[in-house]
Image: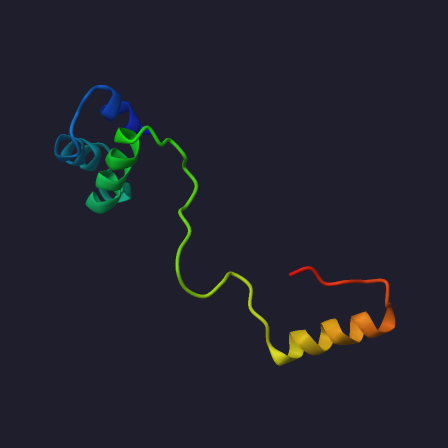
Length: 83
């Protein structure tokens, strides 16, 4: 990752932004994301996974889904639902 490379060269986020924009043009990370990466690298956190977000969970239930699960459980009592 170019941001990490420039960080290891001791470039600041403000110095990194124009370099990345010149190299990647429209495919460049936003300024905000570059600053976030620099902050994470400063904390020695190199985890590239997304952070947890507030809001609606990635799965949701609807009346149709609940009915299908209930019917399935009624046909085979050995099945269970983990929550």
